[in-house]
Length: 199
Image (cartoon, rainbow, N blue to C red; front, top):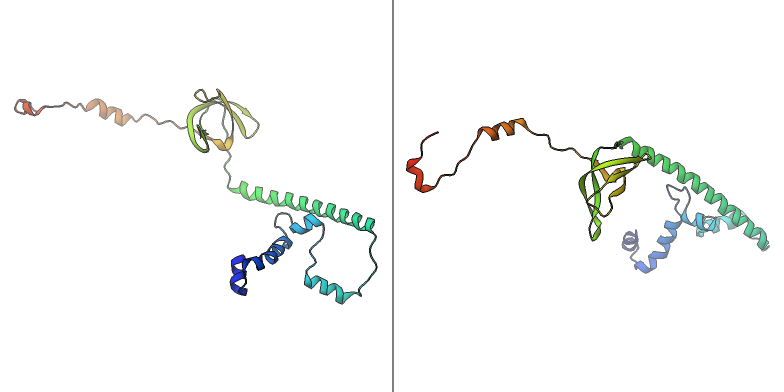
């Protein structure tokens, strides 16, 4: 936004910044339904157009408001704004959850299942890899499991379902075993070539 404003109006970024910040703060947030200014101050910003509209619609009154009434009104407005924002945020969260749940796969593990666990590297907690296989000991609620990690720092680890993958070991291949038992290999030295007899 800053780049576009500076290129269009041929102004420096330091001159355009206050206007862009004001514009961003008065735009209603999609999740909350209210602008950041309304949440902080309980009222929308009075820009030049709003001031002009007020001047045209009513005569300028020199009477000042009572300070106590003004503070009470402001508290009431803030409370109403916060209530609206909480309700709007809750409904936005529900919509996002429904959207996420459409494509989510539910994973369940049972005690005794072998799993791979996403664990951080020793000395580098920002990197992680799947380790294991480990055995699921117990299920705690819908999303948490206790997994036996005998080679880790703790013998048992509490893991979220997103940190677990079902371990599927390799199945023995009977064809490979048969071929391995039929084929035999022998090494021959070059000096013995004349004494080799066909099998």
